[in-house]
Amino acid sequence: MMMTGSNIKSESDDSVWLWNVNLAWELFSSAVYNYRLAINSSKEHQRHSFFMTVVLSSVTAVEAYFNEVLAKEEGWSRSKLKKAKWDEKVSTLGIDFTQKRFSYSKYIRNNFIVHHKRIDSRYFLEINHTAALDAIESSQDIIAEVSYRRGRIFPYWITGLNFINPSHSNDISLLNDYEFWSRFKWLGLSQTVDQMIFPDGSIIPPKDQVTYNSLYKELWQKIKDCGFKLDELNNTRDKRFPLMPFLTSEWWVITPPIDFDGYYEAFGIKPNH
Picture: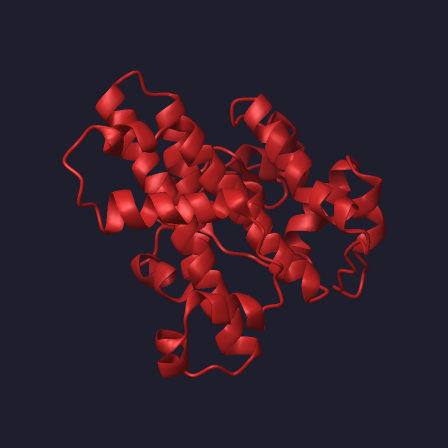
């Protein structure tokens, strides 16, 4: 008997997300999702609401990523993270902080969202399409710079893509960077990707920073150019494993059916109906 969507959901599904959590990832994913909603809305107040969430989530994602790195890799305690000034965190991470776009995004977040005190229309004027896009892209740059200086690949989710898990209501799922780049190696779209991942599960990112940055910048640009509908990703789905998480640029919007017919076809099994 073939399984259906209702057969797949288990009693433990509702608690799966509790251990599959990373604050920086969730915040950045929220920013990208709300940006997608904003550019498809014709209602000005709705667009403004989405753009406001983009700025808030993008900037806070960077702060969460900084805290994660400082705690896990520098051994900072919770009290030190709480007391440390922004400049001290930036200095410890070794960043040459000349990122004017991110600084301005942080300024907008702090002065027009978190600590908003104005009663004039500048609140609406400052939080707009350009501000939202700058917040996302400057956050990508900062997170990538921290990763580059530590000799590792940046977290895959700054590309604007996510895995969704068919066995968990097609919700987003946090996987590892090796799994992400392996999917792109299958597509054969980038010689750089082909040369940086190895069968033992290691990733050796490009030493040249321009090449390194191009891995997320070119992919993000491609996603924007196609309206967040990157059809090439369908080629990374394997019919033999219909419950395997797969990459998409349309997460939280699409709910694709689970291809059980493809599964049985791939293995030459005739299902009982």
